[in-house]
Image (cartoon, rainbow, N blue to C red):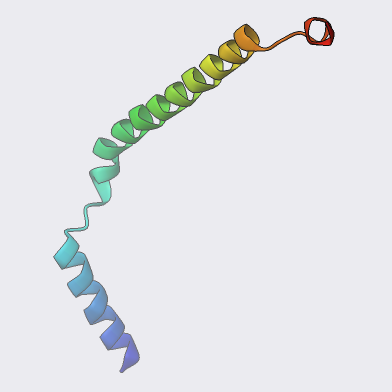
Length: 65
C-alpha cells in the first residue's frame, strides 16, 4: 500500500517539475561561469584590501617618533 502511494507521489512530482536528466549539460556551464565570476570578485576584493592596507599603514619606526 505504502509502496504504491510512494510511486504515485514520485510520478506526480516528476511530472509537475518536468524532470529532465540531461538538463545538467545546459546548466553546468552557466554554473561554472558563475563560480569563476564569484572567485574573481573575491580575489579582486582581497587584492584591493591588501594594497590599501600596505599603502596606508604606518611603519613601526615612524609611529615611535
